Image (cartoon, rainbow, N blue to C red; front, side, top):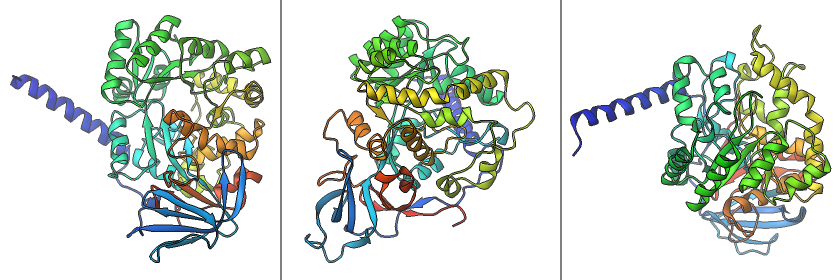
Length: 480
């Protein structure tokens, strides 16, 4: 039987949690919500027909013109040459002439509770706003490997239950790392002192022993985590990283609970340690150094997907190297003050730790593009992920990522597949996933864009319609 003291302690803990969430949601300004970026229509029709559109087969990169695609409920129910389908009289019709229909995009490294603003702007993350931004930009599925917020799984479940509007979320919860390892030094550097303890305790699980590993895996299994994420990287270079033995323990114990493990890595040595431990995917490619053909072959030989996350490193590499030019999707989803804040950092705005890190990233810009080419040449599967955080905007960041993958030698069609079919296959552990492709019987998470995106991924930004679970969403650009 619980004592009064235990009840009081639990209530105090809940109060502290609620206060911290309120502070994080409101930031330093008054608690006010901007106009939504996406909304549900007042009434959703039973059926929707995409009429006379080109349909992109993301498996082979070819577009079939002159197609009708019928959506009934949350599924694609028929596809055929324009005019040949039997369509309910009450169906809503969307004109697809001159446009291309493809699956909704998948961000394989899309943090939901991170903030995109620089520290000096003193804004805190708004997870609900981030979910809207993902959808506005055509991202209908997010794999979130390590969420800063303590309610990551509750948010995932609220979206799945239809109580919260957002992309389908697959979440890992806290990141597992070495004692004092990444991302703890980064949190200590950027989080205000008065909330630092809270972020550390909820975003990270430091591991110093097999018993620490067991407790962390048991916690994540009880929360029904979709994956487990661990960090094998030193940021800064002096920070400790997980030992080979502890990394192997994470994978062994997670797999015993039916959980897959993904790993943050930085160097080839980090990636080989993760691969030898048995991870199921790499949440970055090697980003700190250039690979040679032998190194790329070793990494590709694990036959595990590699989420390149070029956008986040390009973002930091270019800090201080001229003004940051926003993309159209960024101007439609982020306010002007936020976008312009990156061009006006305060004097001494970067600590020596970040300065050295950004200089390394600038020096290795071409190496990352070359690494993509080498890894693909050796048979590696590359997935697209933005790693949304400071300067990387939810949804819009994935479009930047796709452009960088093309700079790394992928064709536009290959880059699109890296953000549709291939991540869907990884997430659902099947060659025939329930989403990520335009086919009868699949979930109607769809994106209708102007033009032909196989000629250039910039066409993906010309969004006409975003459909989530069979509902065509209403999009509202900032200032629109």
